Image 1 (tube, rainbow, N blue to C red):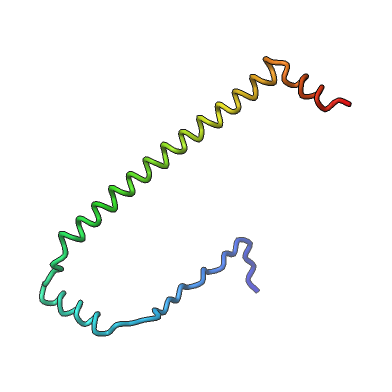
Image 2: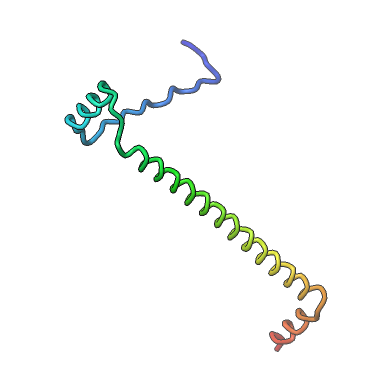
Amino acid sequence: MKLTFFHRPQPKQFEYKPLYFDKEKDERKQRKKELGISNSNDKITLLRGDLQKRWKKGRESQKRQQSKMRFLIYLLLIVFTVYLFFFTNFIEKLVSLFRI
């Protein structure tokens, strides 16, 4: 019997089986590759990719700006509550409201 203290089991293998297979499309791609024909939409795909990058960058900067604003609002709320509790008689008034 073999004793192992630090036995790590092997990971399960990923077995992906495609649900749909278009044989004609694959044959067309193979023929284009053999003949050296590139897509006529190369410029269009490059422009699309560039647009997507710009939009993603814009969304990221917008998210960053929103998170900064959210942080400032939370900070202001905390400062305001600290001011109420320590520098005013807010707690005394609050307690006197609930006193019978």
